[in-house]
Image (cartoon, rainbow, N blue to C red; front, side):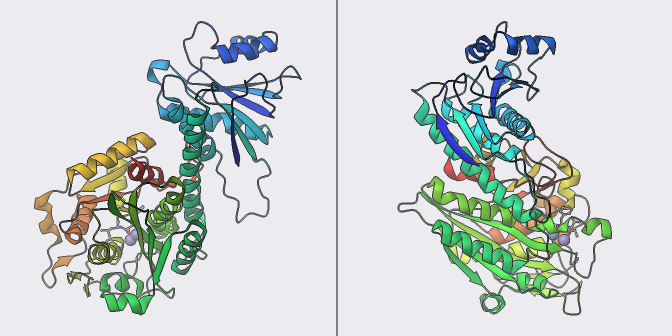
Length: 492
Ligand code: BES
Ligand code: MN
Ligand code: ZN
């Protein structure tokens, strides 16, 4: 989708469809919509009246202009009550409006920067981000490709004065949304293609394309570093594991951050094999890794003054004669020994070594891991909310603020000290599982052991990583959750 920002008036823009917003509870049409109405001799207003259009958030209607305007159609999208307008209202309205335009066959779509009251830059960001997120489709594996695509998005700046800010906001929205698309593509592609080597290739390609540094460690190199926990998980798979380390290093960084993504390209459970139903969606167990790659890809375009290291310990979790057994003891890179209580609690094993690697090799000021870590987190928070765990109040607060800004839901759960005893082992320093109750918390406590003194946060995205139904900003499937939250956090 090619994005262009212009200060042309809605009445004059050439397009297959023009998307324009309408707040609820207004006595008369807002000026830009009134101008369109005037040029169509009152047609727009008559349709809105006839339909009793209430302008509820993301409510839609459209009219054909029959040559009376430069735009062939006008799509009117509701924005709800002005008092309640938020960036998320704008995102969802833009998504709905541009989707309608696309479904009508429009290839060149103009969209007014939606909403008022918010600063132009923020409105433009939300408008473009919503438009792109909402029109994502995945047809890589289909013979019949989607032929209805928006090729050009023309963003109408409200006035000449704010065009610069609108341009900057639109560009940021585009980068955030395309990074999310990138993550969605990786999650939606099946595990027979997206294996650890594929993730490493994707990382290498994006490093070359975007000017990042990349290092990929193979099994032998990970062995040398002592990553016994990560390699224990990899032991059951025919697919070779890869440890990926991407670096974005600006000239004078204000701080150094490590972002770590769980990269289990398929989670069969290992010898503690999952049920057929439990396994069905497990190609999505690399959603954390996908988000990290999406974020790394966007950083050179956004240029924040923060050094960012993206880490992924990529492997499958499979059962086989060479797989780790319940009762086995593994040694992580930081020397901690771990008794395997359940081979299906593999994510924390791979993260233990990635976090240890960050502490030993990168020494970041802060680290954040993203992981589809526990079914328990899905039970606690459902499909729309990620769990947040942290050993540092400041970092937790910054991530919550970033999530808020991005319109992604993040809810903090407590790392209850007393539950640490659930992870005690008779033979090793730690067991990799605790009891069922509080499973998301014990998983967090397990990771915390490896973070040490470094400010660290863990985001359990098991629920929101993949959606079983269409959402306002994403069709069914991989959502690319946490990409925009992390980008907001890193650019704050
Ligand atoms: N990848 C799963 C977590 C998961 C489950 C994500 C369902 C999305 C939906 C993880 O590796 C796992 O299997 N966790 C186990 C841990 C248990 C064995 C302590 C779980 O949650 O059941
Ligand atoms: Mn598992
Ligand atoms: Zn898993």
